[in-house]
Length: 369
Image 1 (tube, rainbow, N blue to C red):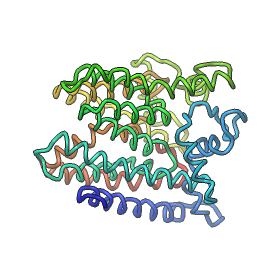
Image 2: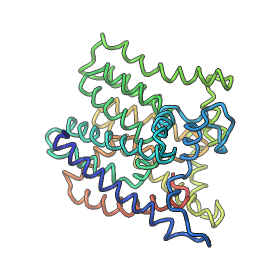
Image 3: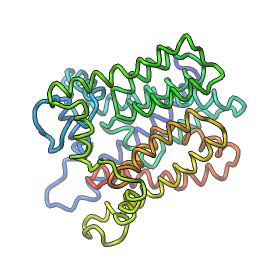
Image 4: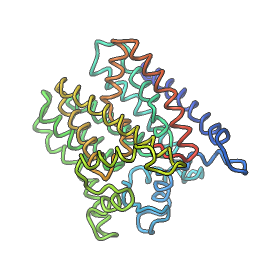
């Protein structure tokens, strides 16, 4: 039976899932500009869902069936989608199911982590989960994307690390490393946390090598079929312009993309998304400063590595989605909301409309991060 904390978190999970389902049905109808009646059930098949579906369906050695190099995507999520699809519900629905279960698990562990970090603030855990579920980019916790599954492994991993349970933490980080390249940053953060923790146990140090195993295994597999250990990075560069760029050049490119007139008038969604990326970068830097002030070295390493990766591409994009992985942000917002209730009300006043707009944009095929 779920604990009272778990029941409250799952209540928020259910409410937000229902809201997103309503948006997935209504947005394509409301904003349809074509002559044909839209198929609202295809609203979930957008952007990276195409590519992850293609990996689940065809694997990595069948060209580019979705129009992009599939080696850019790690295998953990597509593998689960393929397994769930054997029930007969199809790949897109399977992705939604995987994300639904994963987001429920991740929300519970985010609440536990928040309560562990701030035991003096009663009820802080469910509040953190509620704020996370209601994030402006919360639609990506419901769609067939990798964020929810990654968090379902990363959040319990960090809770275990904070408790000094290093073997358990290493196992969860290893699982997270099968889902996204962000697992590399989580491995780095775990090492920093171990070195700076008062609960470090040097006998547990060998466990910290475990998360590297699935990464090396995936790289070896790509070497076998594509001839390069770094085929995933090559694919990122080819398909998403993620070649190394100095941060100031990347920032300049992003400012240009966020300028009015840079894109055609019918792609104003691109302009606004790049503006959102700049706002997100500012928020991330504020979060990083707070973590340094608190001397939360492991979490600071995680946030810094994540931001750094996005700021060394041709331009900064998808950092908005990456905020879902930054558990210190959502816990920090919950702490602020508890200590300054007006901040919590202000957050909800801004986040809820943005979440609805973001979801509507996603379900109608606009670029939404």
